[in-house]
Image 1: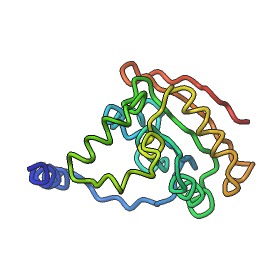
Image 2: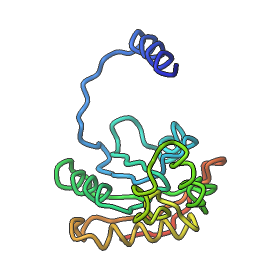
Image 3: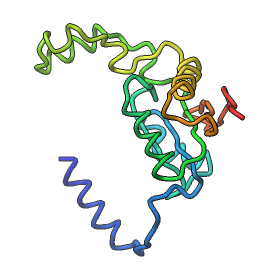
Image 4: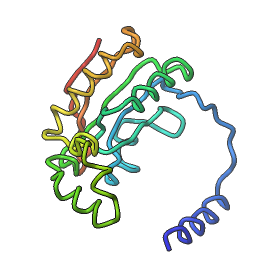
Amino acid sequence: MMLDEVLKANKNFVKDIEPKKMSHMPQKKLAIVTCMDTRLTGFLEPAMGIGRGDAKIIKNAGNTIVDRDVIRSLAAAVYALGVEEIMVVGHYDCGMANVDPEKINAAMMDRGVSPKTVEDLDLKEWIGAIDNEEENVVQNVKKIRGSPFIPSDVPVHGLIIDPYQGTLEVLVEDK
């Protein structure tokens, strides 16, 4: 069971760590909205020069903004945690690009989700499926910028990373 592996790893981890009191405030005053892709774990932060305690990082499928949760988290980061800049960071070869809603629907029903639960749902939007990684970043920057909860003096940038080489490209630079 994976839980056993995690708990064993944690025991080894805490043996070697020297406890350090840290602030919950992001030291670089930065919030990042990015994808939950496993290839970005332990990869994106060093590629951006981000260390522990430097930034608030919000991850979801396809780094999409389809409901209020991402905006709510960004607003909390700005108003309660001192964030002064936001970056949306997508990546090439995203698993949410061109997702087949019919396959997801079938898989959900195979696992016991009732058809009634998903019948009124726009499954492609709900799951965070995207058609183009770059356009997704640009659209999400626009959604954040268009939110009445995000102040106009907070820059919102859009970047994309190559999940193999680690190179970053700026798609939207907000001054």
